[in-house]
Image (cartoon, rainbow, N blue to C red; front, side, top):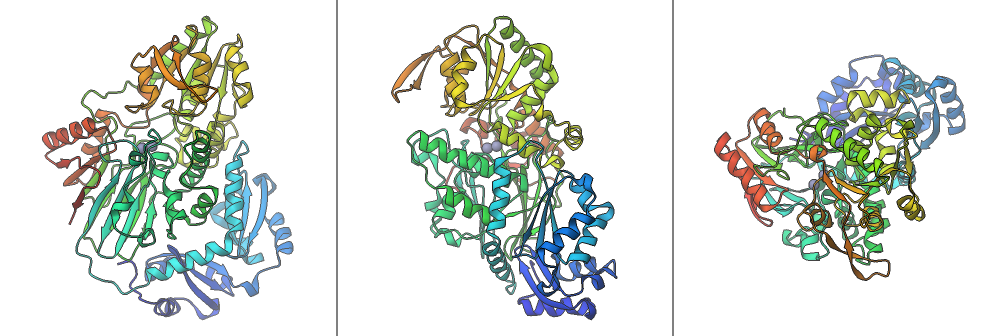
Length: 634
Ligand SMILES: [Zn+2]
Ligand SMILES: [Zn+2]
Protein backbone atom coordinates (compact mmCIF):
# COMPACT_ATOMS: atom_id res chain seq x y z
CA UNK A 1 0.00 0.00 0.00
CA UNK A 2 2.74 2.43 0.92
CA UNK A 3 4.20 2.60 -2.47
CA UNK A 4 3.48 0.84 -5.69
CA UNK A 5 7.23 0.99 -6.35
CA UNK A 6 9.61 -1.63 -5.07
CA UNK A 7 12.76 0.30 -5.96
CA UNK A 8 13.94 3.87 -6.24
CA UNK A 9 14.69 3.34 -9.92
CA UNK A 10 11.12 2.30 -10.61
CA UNK A 11 9.89 5.41 -8.82
CA UNK A 12 12.28 7.69 -10.68
CA UNK A 13 11.12 6.28 -14.03
CA UNK A 14 7.50 7.01 -13.11
CA UNK A 15 8.44 10.56 -12.09
CA UNK A 16 10.34 11.15 -15.33
CA UNK A 17 7.23 10.18 -17.29
CA UNK A 18 5.40 13.17 -15.74
CA UNK A 19 8.24 15.66 -15.23
CA UNK A 20 9.20 17.81 -18.25
CA UNK A 21 12.80 17.21 -19.45
CA UNK A 22 13.76 20.88 -19.15
CA UNK A 23 13.43 20.69 -15.33
CA UNK A 24 16.70 18.72 -15.49
CA UNK A 25 16.18 16.16 -12.73
CA UNK A 26 19.58 15.18 -11.31
CA UNK A 27 18.57 13.08 -8.31
CA UNK A 28 15.47 11.57 -6.77
CA UNK A 29 15.50 10.48 -3.13
CA UNK A 30 13.03 9.17 -0.61
CA UNK A 31 13.77 11.09 2.56
CA UNK A 32 11.70 9.54 5.34
CA UNK A 33 8.06 10.22 4.51
CA UNK A 34 8.71 12.47 1.50
CA UNK A 35 10.13 12.23 -2.00
CA UNK A 36 12.75 14.84 -2.83
CA UNK A 37 13.52 15.89 -6.39
CA UNK A 38 16.77 17.71 -7.12
CA UNK A 39 16.41 19.93 -10.18
CA UNK A 40 18.77 22.19 -12.09
CA UNK A 41 15.90 24.26 -13.41
CA UNK A 42 13.14 24.81 -10.84
CA UNK A 43 11.84 27.73 -12.92
CA UNK A 44 10.76 25.26 -15.61
CA UNK A 45 8.91 23.27 -12.94
CA UNK A 46 6.87 26.31 -11.91
CA UNK A 47 5.66 26.82 -15.49
CA UNK A 48 3.04 24.11 -15.01
CA UNK A 49 0.98 25.03 -11.92
CA UNK A 50 -0.50 21.55 -11.59
CA UNK A 51 2.75 19.67 -11.87
CA UNK A 52 3.25 19.15 -8.14
CA UNK A 53 -0.25 17.70 -7.73
CA UNK A 54 0.22 15.44 -10.76
CA UNK A 55 3.51 14.12 -9.39
CA UNK A 56 2.21 13.63 -5.85
CA UNK A 57 -0.75 11.64 -7.09
CA UNK A 58 1.56 9.56 -9.30
CA UNK A 59 3.89 8.56 -6.43
CA UNK A 60 1.30 8.91 -3.63
CA UNK A 61 3.75 10.76 -1.41
CA UNK A 62 4.54 14.31 -0.48
CA UNK A 63 6.99 15.83 -2.99
CA UNK A 64 9.64 18.38 -2.09
CA UNK A 65 11.71 20.25 -4.67
CA UNK A 66 15.30 21.26 -4.12
CA UNK A 67 17.87 22.81 -6.39
CA UNK A 68 20.80 20.74 -7.54
CA UNK A 69 23.91 21.79 -5.56
CA UNK A 70 25.53 23.08 -8.79
CA UNK A 71 22.99 25.91 -9.15
CA UNK A 72 23.02 27.17 -5.55
CA UNK A 73 24.21 30.72 -5.05
CA UNK A 74 27.13 30.91 -2.56
CA UNK A 75 25.68 31.52 0.96
CA UNK A 76 27.04 35.09 1.36
CA UNK A 77 25.45 36.17 -1.92
CA UNK A 78 22.25 34.30 -1.15
CA UNK A 79 22.07 35.98 2.25
CA UNK A 80 22.11 39.45 0.70
CA UNK A 81 19.54 38.46 -1.92
CA UNK A 82 17.21 37.07 0.78
CA UNK A 83 17.54 40.20 2.91
CA UNK A 84 16.60 42.27 -0.13
CA UNK A 85 13.66 40.03 -1.06
CA UNK A 86 11.98 39.72 2.35
CA UNK A 87 10.04 42.84 3.52
CA UNK A 88 11.65 44.32 6.67
CA UNK A 89 8.47 43.97 8.78
CA UNK A 90 9.00 40.19 8.75
CA UNK A 91 11.36 40.76 11.69
CA UNK A 92 14.01 38.29 10.59
CA UNK A 93 16.00 36.98 13.54
CA UNK A 94 18.39 34.64 11.87
CA UNK A 95 19.27 33.17 8.49
CA UNK A 96 21.27 29.92 8.40
CA UNK A 97 22.16 27.56 5.57
CA UNK A 98 21.53 23.84 5.98
CA UNK A 99 23.91 22.43 3.40
CA UNK A 100 22.85 18.81 4.02
CA UNK A 101 19.41 19.62 2.60
CA UNK A 102 20.20 22.59 0.30
CA UNK A 103 17.84 24.60 2.47
CA UNK A 104 18.01 28.03 4.00
CA UNK A 105 16.51 28.31 7.49
CA UNK A 106 14.87 31.69 8.05
CA UNK A 107 13.71 32.45 11.57
CA UNK A 108 11.41 35.43 11.83
CA UNK A 109 8.82 37.03 14.09
CA UNK A 110 6.31 37.07 11.22
CA UNK A 111 6.73 33.95 9.10
CA UNK A 112 3.69 34.94 7.03
CA UNK A 113 5.56 37.96 5.69
CA UNK A 114 8.56 35.79 4.76
CA UNK A 115 6.25 33.45 2.88
CA UNK A 116 4.41 36.27 1.13
CA UNK A 117 0.96 36.27 -0.47
CA UNK A 118 0.39 32.91 -2.12
CA UNK A 119 4.00 31.98 -1.28
CA UNK A 120 5.36 34.60 -3.68
CA UNK A 121 8.33 35.70 -1.57
CA UNK A 122 9.40 32.10 -0.98
CA UNK A 123 9.18 31.38 -4.67
CA UNK A 124 11.36 34.36 -5.51
CA UNK A 125 13.95 33.21 -2.94
CA UNK A 126 14.11 29.80 -4.63
CA UNK A 127 14.32 31.28 -8.12
CA UNK A 128 16.97 33.85 -7.28
CA UNK A 129 19.19 31.89 -4.88
CA UNK A 130 18.42 28.22 -5.52
CA UNK A 131 18.11 27.61 -1.77
CA UNK A 132 14.85 26.12 -0.56
CA UNK A 133 13.53 28.20 2.38
CA UNK A 134 12.43 26.61 5.67
CA UNK A 135 10.62 29.27 7.67
CA UNK A 136 10.48 29.14 11.47
CA UNK A 137 8.67 31.38 13.94
CA UNK A 138 10.62 33.14 16.69
CA UNK A 139 9.16 32.81 20.18
CA UNK A 140 7.83 36.15 21.51
CA UNK A 141 9.72 35.60 24.76
CA UNK A 142 13.15 34.09 24.17
CA UNK A 143 13.18 30.31 24.67
CA UNK A 144 16.46 28.60 25.43
CA UNK A 145 15.03 25.19 24.56
CA UNK A 146 13.71 26.25 21.16
CA UNK A 147 17.06 27.86 20.37
CA UNK A 148 18.98 24.74 21.42
CA UNK A 149 16.70 22.39 19.46
CA UNK A 150 17.04 24.43 16.28
CA UNK A 151 20.82 24.66 16.64
CA UNK A 152 21.09 20.95 17.37
CA UNK A 153 19.02 19.98 14.32
CA UNK A 154 21.11 22.22 12.08
CA UNK A 155 24.29 20.80 13.53
CA UNK A 156 23.08 17.22 12.97
CA UNK A 157 22.16 17.97 9.32
CA UNK A 158 24.43 15.39 7.64
CA UNK A 159 23.50 12.58 10.07
CA UNK A 160 19.85 13.43 9.77
CA UNK A 161 20.04 13.33 6.02
CA UNK A 162 21.61 9.84 6.11
CA UNK A 163 19.03 8.63 8.60
CA UNK A 164 16.11 9.92 6.51
CA UNK A 165 17.43 8.44 3.26
CA UNK A 166 17.98 5.04 4.92
CA UNK A 167 14.49 5.17 6.34
CA UNK A 168 13.13 5.99 2.89
CA UNK A 169 14.82 2.91 1.43
CA UNK A 170 12.99 0.68 3.91
CA UNK A 171 9.67 1.89 2.50
CA UNK A 172 10.50 0.77 -1.01
CA UNK A 173 9.89 -2.95 -0.74
CA UNK A 174 7.54 -5.18 -2.71
CA UNK A 175 4.14 -5.19 -1.00
CA UNK A 176 3.23 -8.30 1.00
CA UNK A 177 -0.19 -9.46 2.12
CA UNK A 178 -1.05 -8.19 5.60
CA UNK A 179 -3.62 -10.46 7.25
CA UNK A 180 -3.46 -9.84 10.99
CA UNK A 181 -2.99 -7.02 13.46
CA UNK A 182 -2.65 -7.09 17.22
CA UNK A 183 -1.91 -4.72 20.07
CA UNK A 184 0.00 -5.55 23.25
CA UNK A 185 -0.23 -3.62 26.51
CA UNK A 186 3.28 -2.71 27.60
CA UNK A 187 2.29 -0.04 30.12
CA UNK A 188 -0.44 2.38 31.16
CA UNK A 189 -3.22 -0.24 31.09
CA UNK A 190 -5.39 -0.15 34.24
CA UNK A 191 -2.99 2.49 35.58
CA UNK A 192 -1.80 6.02 34.84
CA UNK A 193 1.89 6.26 33.97
CA UNK A 194 4.37 4.50 31.61
CA UNK A 195 1.95 4.48 28.66
CA UNK A 196 3.20 2.15 25.95
CA UNK A 197 1.26 0.20 23.33
CA UNK A 198 2.83 -2.15 20.79
CA UNK A 199 1.07 -2.49 17.45
CA UNK A 200 2.11 -5.47 15.35
CA UNK A 201 1.37 -6.78 11.89
CA UNK A 202 3.26 -9.51 9.98
CA UNK A 203 5.99 -7.01 9.06
CA UNK A 204 5.63 -4.09 11.49
CA UNK A 205 6.43 -3.42 15.13
CA UNK A 206 5.29 0.05 16.14
CA UNK A 207 5.24 1.59 19.60
CA UNK A 208 2.71 4.27 20.39
CA UNK A 209 4.09 6.24 23.37
CA UNK A 210 6.78 4.98 25.70
CA UNK A 211 6.42 6.69 29.05
CA UNK A 212 7.64 6.64 32.60
CA UNK A 213 5.67 6.35 35.79
CA UNK A 214 7.25 9.38 37.48
CA UNK A 215 5.13 8.76 40.53
CA UNK A 216 6.95 5.53 41.40
CA UNK A 217 10.53 4.82 42.39
CA UNK A 218 10.11 1.05 42.01
CA UNK A 219 11.64 0.01 38.65
CA UNK A 220 9.03 -2.75 38.35
CA UNK A 221 6.29 -0.13 38.21
CA UNK A 222 8.23 2.71 36.65
CA UNK A 223 9.14 1.45 33.19
CA UNK A 224 7.07 -0.17 30.43
CA UNK A 225 7.41 -3.95 29.94
CA UNK A 226 9.77 -3.70 26.96
CA UNK A 227 11.48 -6.98 27.87
CA UNK A 228 8.24 -8.83 27.30
CA UNK A 229 8.32 -7.97 23.58
CA UNK A 230 10.80 -10.78 23.03
CA UNK A 231 12.73 -8.75 20.49
CA UNK A 232 15.68 -6.41 20.40
CA UNK A 233 14.95 -2.69 20.39
CA UNK A 234 16.39 -2.37 16.87
CA UNK A 235 13.47 -4.47 15.59
CA UNK A 236 11.03 -1.69 16.42
CA UNK A 237 10.18 0.12 13.17
CA UNK A 238 8.85 3.36 14.60
CA UNK A 239 7.73 5.15 17.73
CA UNK A 240 4.72 7.45 17.50
CA UNK A 241 4.28 9.93 20.34
CA UNK A 242 0.87 11.37 21.21
CA UNK A 243 2.10 14.21 23.44
CA UNK A 244 4.95 15.50 25.56
CA UNK A 245 3.93 14.47 29.09
CA UNK A 246 6.47 12.15 30.68
CA UNK A 247 3.98 9.35 31.29
CA UNK A 248 3.96 9.09 27.46
CA UNK A 249 7.43 10.28 26.45
CA UNK A 250 9.66 9.67 29.46
CA UNK A 251 11.20 6.36 28.37
CA UNK A 252 11.83 7.16 24.69
CA UNK A 253 15.49 8.25 25.12
CA UNK A 254 16.12 4.88 26.80
CA UNK A 255 15.20 3.21 23.49
CA UNK A 256 17.84 5.30 21.70
CA UNK A 257 20.38 4.54 24.42
CA UNK A 258 19.91 0.78 23.96
CA UNK A 259 19.88 0.14 20.25
CA UNK A 260 16.82 1.74 18.69
CA UNK A 261 17.78 3.65 15.52
CA UNK A 262 14.36 4.34 14.01
CA UNK A 263 12.16 7.42 13.77
CA UNK A 264 10.11 9.19 16.40
CA UNK A 265 6.98 10.76 14.93
CA UNK A 266 5.24 13.64 16.70
CA UNK A 267 3.96 17.15 16.04
CA UNK A 268 6.56 19.97 16.05
CA UNK A 269 5.13 21.39 19.30
CA UNK A 270 5.29 17.96 20.95
CA UNK A 271 8.93 17.62 19.92
CA UNK A 272 9.92 20.89 21.62
CA UNK A 273 7.90 20.30 24.77
CA UNK A 274 9.18 16.73 25.03
CA UNK A 275 12.81 17.84 24.93
CA UNK A 276 12.04 20.40 27.65
CA UNK A 277 10.37 17.82 29.91
CA UNK A 278 12.97 15.10 29.33
CA UNK A 279 15.85 17.41 30.20
CA UNK A 280 14.09 18.36 33.39
CA UNK A 281 13.31 14.71 34.11
CA UNK A 282 17.01 13.84 34.05
CA UNK A 283 17.80 16.74 36.39
CA UNK A 284 15.04 15.78 38.82
CA UNK A 285 15.98 12.08 38.86
CA UNK A 286 19.65 12.80 39.35
CA UNK A 287 18.81 15.42 41.98
CA UNK A 288 16.71 12.91 43.92
CA UNK A 289 19.52 10.39 43.76
CA UNK A 290 17.35 7.94 41.77
CA UNK A 291 19.76 8.13 38.86
CA UNK A 292 18.37 8.49 35.37
CA UNK A 293 18.06 5.59 32.92
CA UNK A 294 19.47 7.73 30.10
CA UNK A 295 21.46 10.91 29.55
CA UNK A 296 21.56 14.15 27.61
CA UNK A 297 23.19 12.53 24.58
CA UNK A 298 20.29 10.07 24.24
CA UNK A 299 17.85 12.99 24.14
CA UNK A 300 20.01 14.53 21.39
CA UNK A 301 19.93 11.26 19.47
CA UNK A 302 16.16 11.14 19.86
CA UNK A 303 15.91 14.69 18.56
CA UNK A 304 17.97 13.95 15.45
CA UNK A 305 15.69 10.95 14.73
CA UNK A 306 12.46 12.92 15.19
CA UNK A 307 10.22 13.47 12.19
CA UNK A 308 7.51 16.04 12.81
CA UNK A 309 4.07 15.78 11.24
CA UNK A 310 1.16 18.18 11.39
CA UNK A 311 -2.46 17.26 12.14
CA UNK A 312 -4.09 15.65 9.11
CA UNK A 313 -0.86 14.72 7.30
CA UNK A 314 -1.04 11.07 6.22
CA UNK A 315 2.31 9.37 6.80
CA UNK A 316 3.62 5.93 5.88
CA UNK A 317 5.30 4.35 8.89
CA UNK A 318 6.02 0.93 7.39
CA UNK A 319 4.93 -0.63 4.10
CA UNK A 320 1.87 -1.93 5.99
CA UNK A 321 0.88 0.92 8.28
CA UNK A 322 0.17 4.59 7.80
CA UNK A 323 -0.88 7.07 10.45
CA UNK A 324 -2.41 10.52 10.79
CA UNK A 325 -2.44 12.84 13.79
CA UNK A 326 -5.68 14.53 14.93
CA UNK A 327 -6.13 17.20 17.58
CA UNK A 328 -6.55 15.75 21.09
CA UNK A 329 -7.22 19.06 22.92
CA UNK A 330 -5.11 17.94 25.91
CA UNK A 331 -1.95 20.09 25.77
CA UNK A 332 -0.16 22.05 23.04
CA UNK A 333 0.58 19.70 20.13
CA UNK A 334 -1.26 16.73 21.67
CA UNK A 335 -2.59 14.23 19.17
CA UNK A 336 -4.82 11.27 18.69
CA UNK A 337 -3.25 8.74 16.33
CA UNK A 338 -5.29 7.21 13.54
CA UNK A 339 -3.61 4.06 12.21
CA UNK A 340 -4.57 2.49 8.92
CA UNK A 341 -3.31 -1.09 8.62
CA UNK A 342 -3.00 -3.07 5.38
CA UNK A 343 -5.07 -2.13 2.36
CA UNK A 344 -8.13 -1.32 4.45
CA UNK A 345 -7.62 -4.34 6.73
CA UNK A 346 -8.11 -2.43 9.98
CA UNK A 347 -8.34 1.10 11.33
CA UNK A 348 -7.65 2.03 14.88
CA UNK A 349 -7.55 5.27 16.82
CA UNK A 350 -5.42 5.68 19.93
CA UNK A 351 -6.69 8.79 21.68
CA UNK A 352 -3.69 9.46 23.92
CA UNK A 353 -4.80 11.88 26.64
CA UNK A 354 -7.66 13.96 25.31
CA UNK A 355 -10.10 16.66 26.26
CA UNK A 356 -13.50 16.64 24.63
CA UNK A 357 -14.40 20.05 25.92
CA UNK A 358 -13.24 23.58 25.45
CA UNK A 359 -10.37 24.94 27.50
CA UNK A 360 -8.99 28.47 27.56
CA UNK A 361 -6.09 27.29 25.45
CA UNK A 362 -7.27 24.60 23.03
CA UNK A 363 -10.16 23.39 20.92
CA UNK A 364 -11.87 20.10 21.83
CA UNK A 365 -10.58 16.77 20.49
CA UNK A 366 -11.54 15.78 16.94
CA UNK A 367 -14.21 13.09 16.60
CA UNK A 368 -14.26 12.49 12.83
CA UNK A 369 -12.03 9.91 11.24
CA UNK A 370 -12.01 8.31 7.80
CA UNK A 371 -12.65 4.89 9.36
CA UNK A 372 -12.33 3.42 12.85
CA UNK A 373 -13.01 -0.14 13.94
CA UNK A 374 -11.05 -0.15 17.21
CA UNK A 375 -10.75 2.74 19.64
CA UNK A 376 -8.14 2.70 22.39
CA UNK A 377 -9.15 5.48 24.74
CA UNK A 378 -7.91 7.07 27.93
CA UNK A 379 -10.08 6.70 31.04
CA UNK A 380 -8.44 8.94 33.66
CA UNK A 381 -11.79 10.32 34.80
CA UNK A 382 -13.81 7.29 33.71
CA UNK A 383 -15.56 6.67 37.03
CA UNK A 384 -19.29 7.37 37.05
CA UNK A 385 -18.81 10.16 39.64
CA UNK A 386 -15.88 11.83 37.90
CA UNK A 387 -17.57 15.04 36.88
CA UNK A 388 -15.82 18.35 36.45
CA UNK A 389 -17.54 21.68 36.93
CA UNK A 390 -17.64 24.13 34.02
CA UNK A 391 -14.46 26.11 33.49
CA UNK A 392 -16.10 29.41 34.57
CA UNK A 393 -16.94 27.86 37.93
CA UNK A 394 -13.32 26.75 38.38
CA UNK A 395 -12.03 30.18 37.39
CA UNK A 396 -14.39 31.83 39.89
CA UNK A 397 -13.20 29.46 42.62
CA UNK A 398 -9.55 30.27 41.96
CA UNK A 399 -10.33 34.00 42.00
CA UNK A 400 -12.24 33.62 45.28
CA UNK A 401 -9.50 31.63 47.05
CA UNK A 402 -6.83 34.04 45.78
CA UNK A 403 -8.80 37.06 47.06
CA UNK A 404 -9.44 35.46 50.47
CA UNK A 405 -5.76 34.59 50.78
CA UNK A 406 -4.75 38.11 49.69
CA UNK A 407 -6.88 39.54 52.50
CA UNK A 408 -4.99 37.33 54.99
CA UNK A 409 -1.72 38.45 53.37
CA UNK A 410 -0.99 34.84 52.57
CA UNK A 411 0.35 33.05 49.53
CA UNK A 412 -1.46 30.71 47.17
CA UNK A 413 0.48 27.72 45.92
CA UNK A 414 -0.89 26.11 42.77
CA UNK A 415 1.03 22.93 41.88
CA UNK A 416 0.84 22.56 38.10
CA UNK A 417 2.16 20.47 35.28
CA UNK A 418 4.55 22.96 33.70
CA UNK A 419 3.07 22.12 30.33
CA UNK A 420 -0.63 22.67 29.80
CA UNK A 421 -2.19 23.41 33.19
CA UNK A 422 0.33 26.11 33.88
CA UNK A 423 -0.61 28.09 30.77
CA UNK A 424 -4.32 27.48 31.37
CA UNK A 425 -4.08 28.91 34.90
CA UNK A 426 -1.94 31.83 33.67
CA UNK A 427 -4.73 32.71 31.23
CA UNK A 428 -7.29 32.62 34.04
CA UNK A 429 -5.20 34.77 36.37
CA UNK A 430 -4.47 37.21 33.58
CA UNK A 431 -8.21 37.49 32.97
CA UNK A 432 -9.14 37.89 36.65
CA UNK A 433 -6.38 40.07 38.09
CA UNK A 434 -5.16 43.27 36.57
CA UNK A 435 -1.60 44.41 37.03
CA UNK A 436 -2.56 47.18 39.46
CA UNK A 437 -4.36 44.98 42.01
CA UNK A 438 -1.23 44.37 44.06
CA UNK A 439 -0.98 40.68 43.22
CA UNK A 440 2.18 39.09 41.94
CA UNK A 441 2.14 35.77 40.12
CA UNK A 442 5.39 33.84 40.36
CA UNK A 443 6.16 31.23 37.74
CA UNK A 444 8.65 28.61 38.87
CA UNK A 445 10.42 25.84 37.00
CA UNK A 446 9.92 25.23 33.34
CA UNK A 447 6.57 26.93 33.00
CA UNK A 448 8.26 29.99 31.53
CA UNK A 449 10.06 27.95 28.87
CA UNK A 450 6.87 26.02 28.19
CA UNK A 451 4.98 29.29 27.69
CA UNK A 452 7.72 30.45 25.31
CA UNK A 453 7.18 27.28 23.26
CA UNK A 454 3.44 28.05 23.15
CA UNK A 455 4.26 31.34 21.41
CA UNK A 456 6.13 29.48 18.64
CA UNK A 457 3.04 27.46 17.74
CA UNK A 458 0.04 29.83 17.91
CA UNK A 459 -1.71 27.86 15.15
CA UNK A 460 -2.40 25.04 17.65
CA UNK A 461 -4.13 27.37 20.10
CA UNK A 462 -7.68 28.66 20.27
CA UNK A 463 -8.38 31.44 17.88
CA UNK A 464 -8.43 34.35 20.33
CA UNK A 465 -5.13 33.36 21.97
CA UNK A 466 -3.63 32.79 18.55
CA UNK A 467 -4.67 36.26 17.49
CA UNK A 468 -3.21 37.86 20.61
CA UNK A 469 0.15 36.16 20.10
CA UNK A 470 0.23 37.16 16.44
CA UNK A 471 -0.56 40.75 17.40
CA UNK A 472 2.30 40.83 19.89
CA UNK A 473 -0.05 40.85 22.88
CA UNK A 474 0.86 37.41 24.21
CA UNK A 475 -0.97 36.73 27.48
CA UNK A 476 2.12 34.84 28.68
CA UNK A 477 4.38 37.91 28.49
CA UNK A 478 2.40 40.20 30.84
CA UNK A 479 4.09 42.08 33.73
CA UNK A 480 1.68 40.33 36.16
CA UNK A 481 3.98 37.31 35.85
CA UNK A 482 7.50 37.12 37.30
CA UNK A 483 9.91 34.24 37.17
CA UNK A 484 11.33 32.57 40.22
CA UNK A 485 15.03 32.07 40.74
CA UNK A 486 15.52 29.10 43.13
CA UNK A 487 17.52 31.12 45.64
CA UNK A 488 14.64 33.60 45.98
CA UNK A 489 12.01 31.01 46.93
CA UNK A 490 12.44 31.61 50.67
CA UNK A 491 12.15 35.40 50.27
CA UNK A 492 8.99 35.02 48.20
CA UNK A 493 7.45 32.66 50.76
CA UNK A 494 8.33 34.91 53.71
CA UNK A 495 7.48 38.29 52.20
CA UNK A 496 4.29 40.04 53.28
CA UNK A 497 3.12 40.76 49.76
CA UNK A 498 0.23 38.72 48.41
CA UNK A 499 1.30 36.28 45.73
CA UNK A 500 0.26 33.29 43.69
CA UNK A 501 2.95 30.73 42.95
CA UNK A 502 2.64 28.34 40.01
CA UNK A 503 5.15 25.54 40.40
CA UNK A 504 5.65 22.03 39.04
CA UNK A 505 5.18 19.16 39.61
CA UNK A 506 1.42 19.14 39.55
CA UNK A 507 1.04 16.20 41.94
CA UNK A 508 3.72 17.31 44.42
CA UNK A 509 5.82 14.32 43.36
CA UNK A 510 8.97 16.46 43.26
CA UNK A 511 10.18 19.75 41.82
CA UNK A 512 9.67 23.25 43.09
CA UNK A 513 6.03 22.82 44.16
CA UNK A 514 7.33 20.58 46.98
CA UNK A 515 9.99 23.16 47.88
CA UNK A 516 7.32 25.84 48.17
CA UNK A 517 5.00 23.50 50.08
CA UNK A 518 7.70 23.02 52.71
CA UNK A 519 7.98 26.82 53.06
CA UNK A 520 4.23 27.53 53.12
CA UNK A 521 2.41 24.53 54.65
CA UNK A 522 2.74 25.50 58.33
CA UNK A 523 1.03 28.88 57.98
CA UNK A 524 -2.75 28.90 57.95
CA UNK A 525 -2.85 32.23 56.12
CA UNK A 526 -1.62 30.39 53.00
CA UNK A 527 -3.62 28.26 50.57
CA UNK A 528 -2.97 25.46 48.14
CA UNK A 529 -5.22 24.86 45.13
CA UNK A 530 -5.09 21.58 43.23
CA UNK A 531 -6.04 22.07 39.60
CA UNK A 532 -5.15 18.72 38.03
CA UNK A 533 -5.18 14.97 38.41
CA UNK A 534 -3.58 13.60 41.62
CA UNK A 535 -2.51 9.98 41.29
CA UNK A 536 -3.40 7.50 44.01
CA UNK A 537 -0.03 7.43 45.79
CA UNK A 538 1.05 11.02 45.23
CA UNK A 539 1.72 13.54 48.00
CA UNK A 540 -0.81 15.79 46.30
CA UNK A 541 -3.57 13.19 46.79
CA UNK A 542 -2.69 12.81 50.50
CA UNK A 543 -3.03 16.54 51.12
CA UNK A 544 -6.10 16.81 48.94
CA UNK A 545 -7.71 14.04 51.03
CA UNK A 546 -7.11 16.05 54.20
CA UNK A 547 -3.89 14.65 55.73
CA UNK A 548 -2.65 17.08 58.35
CA UNK A 549 0.82 15.54 58.53
CA UNK A 550 2.69 14.31 55.47
CA UNK A 551 6.13 12.79 54.93
CA UNK A 552 8.71 14.93 53.07
CA UNK A 553 12.45 14.81 52.51
CA UNK A 554 14.06 17.71 54.40
CA UNK A 555 17.11 19.83 53.48
CA UNK A 556 19.41 17.28 55.08
CA UNK A 557 17.99 14.57 52.82
CA UNK A 558 16.23 12.90 55.77
CA UNK A 559 12.60 11.83 56.00
CA UNK A 560 10.64 14.40 57.95
CA UNK A 561 7.02 15.16 58.84
CA UNK A 562 5.43 18.31 57.49
CA UNK A 563 2.46 19.86 59.29
CA UNK A 564 -0.23 20.92 56.84
CA UNK A 565 -2.08 23.95 58.19
CA UNK A 566 -2.76 25.86 55.00
CA UNK A 567 -6.18 26.02 53.38
CA UNK A 568 -6.60 23.12 50.93
CA UNK A 569 -8.82 23.62 47.89
CA UNK A 570 -9.47 21.79 44.65
CA UNK A 571 -10.57 23.47 41.44
CA UNK A 572 -11.21 20.58 39.06
CA UNK A 573 -12.42 22.41 36.01
CA UNK A 574 -9.04 22.75 34.32
CA UNK A 575 -8.08 19.19 33.77
CA UNK A 576 -6.68 18.51 30.32
CA UNK A 577 -8.53 15.21 30.54
CA UNK A 578 -12.15 14.63 29.66
CA UNK A 579 -14.44 14.06 32.61
CA UNK A 580 -16.87 11.14 32.62
CA UNK A 581 -19.55 13.05 30.69
CA UNK A 582 -17.04 14.23 28.11
CA UNK A 583 -15.65 10.70 27.65
CA UNK A 584 -19.15 9.39 26.97
CA UNK A 585 -20.01 12.37 24.76
CA UNK A 586 -16.82 11.83 22.75
CA UNK A 587 -17.74 8.20 21.99
CA UNK A 588 -21.27 9.28 21.10
CA UNK A 589 -19.92 11.95 18.73
CA UNK A 590 -17.39 9.62 17.04
CA UNK A 591 -17.94 9.15 13.32
CA UNK A 592 -17.86 6.42 12.24
CA UNK A 593 -18.73 4.30 15.29
CA UNK A 594 -16.04 1.86 16.44
CA UNK A 595 -17.05 -1.75 17.06
CA UNK A 596 -14.48 -2.29 19.80
CA UNK A 597 -13.18 -0.04 22.58
CA UNK A 598 -10.16 -0.70 24.78
CA UNK A 599 -10.05 1.45 27.92
CA UNK A 600 -6.62 2.40 29.19
CA UNK A 601 -4.86 5.17 31.16
CA UNK A 602 -6.92 5.18 34.36
CA UNK A 603 -6.93 3.57 37.80
CA UNK A 604 -8.31 -0.01 37.67
CA UNK A 605 -11.77 0.92 38.91
CA UNK A 606 -12.10 3.82 36.45
CA UNK A 607 -11.15 1.71 33.43
CA UNK A 608 -13.62 -0.99 34.50
CA UNK A 609 -16.40 1.45 35.26
CA UNK A 610 -16.05 3.24 31.93
CA UNK A 611 -15.84 0.08 29.83
CA UNK A 612 -18.89 -1.43 31.59
CA UNK A 613 -20.89 1.73 30.95
CA UNK A 614 -19.82 1.93 27.30
CA UNK A 615 -20.80 -1.71 26.72
CA UNK A 616 -24.16 -1.27 28.39
CA UNK A 617 -25.15 2.12 27.10
CA UNK A 618 -23.65 2.12 23.63
CA UNK A 619 -23.66 -1.58 22.81
CA UNK A 620 -20.00 -1.57 21.93
CA UNK A 621 -17.61 -4.35 22.88
CA UNK A 622 -15.57 -2.42 25.49
CA UNK A 623 -12.98 -3.87 27.82
CA UNK A 624 -10.08 -2.85 30.03
CA UNK A 625 -7.20 -5.31 29.56
CA UNK A 626 -4.23 -5.65 31.90
CA UNK A 627 -0.63 -4.76 31.18
CA UNK A 628 0.98 -7.57 29.13
CA UNK A 629 -2.35 -8.61 27.57
CA UNK A 630 -2.41 -8.89 23.78
CA UNK A 631 -5.55 -8.32 21.75
CA UNK A 632 -5.91 -9.53 18.19
CA UNK A 633 -7.83 -6.84 16.32
CA UNK A 634 -8.08 -8.65 13.01
ZN1 LIG B 1 -0.92 13.98 29.33
ZN1 LIG C 1 -1.09 10.65 30.39
